[in-house]
Length: 238
Ligand SMILES: C[S@@+](CC[C@H](N)C(=O)[O-])C[C@H]1O[C@@H](n2cnc3c(N)ncnc32)[C@H](O)[C@@H]1O
Image: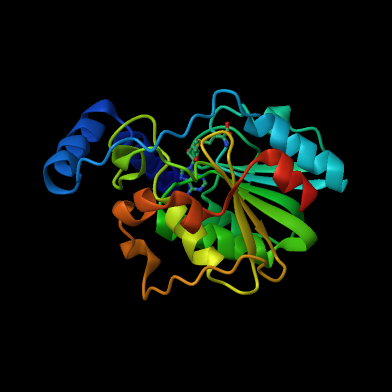
């Protein structure tokens, strides 16, 4: 187990090293990028995730918080709540495991889950599915980095430091589920919001595999796919 954890850590660090990122950048530049302009999302004047997560916790009187992916605990340390758990295989939080390993042995239920681990569609989809299993009635799932501004910010494999990954594809998929109510808050690189309740804005966008969605589709009409709302609007429907 110790050796497995050590190797996992090394792989994550290697994939985020400058040289590897550069190799993937040129790979995307020559083979995948269609040269679309930046969308123009500007988060500078918006509330940040620390404010928003804490505000939701206070408004809903939540007592149990789970954060997946903690890094340097910038968010985790800021959260004031009765009980919190942070899961990260490399740094921060309270449990040194991947989210899959954590959920495998987990028995606890949470009111608020903040998903911010590995930002790939497949992993985020698993994180959402597992979080839904352990979400209290009336709970909420939040996901960081749902609104990439350009192709490189969302390209996988990761090719630069500023990276949302293709979390957005998992949001699009959830928006097509009639049993989930899904929004994207226009703040802090896009905060996905999932409630376990009937979908009030069902998206008709059938796909066999949402991993195959193209950045061009998102770029054409991000609002249609992501159901973007300001935080003030979101507060009214919490
Ligand atoms: C963007 S950082 C998290 C930032 C933090 N949530 C915050 O708001 O300040 C992503 C973290 O996810 C962790 N991570 C990578 N793969 C993971 C996995 N499979 N399960 C859980 N965490 C993972 C990384 O080690 C990294 O620390």
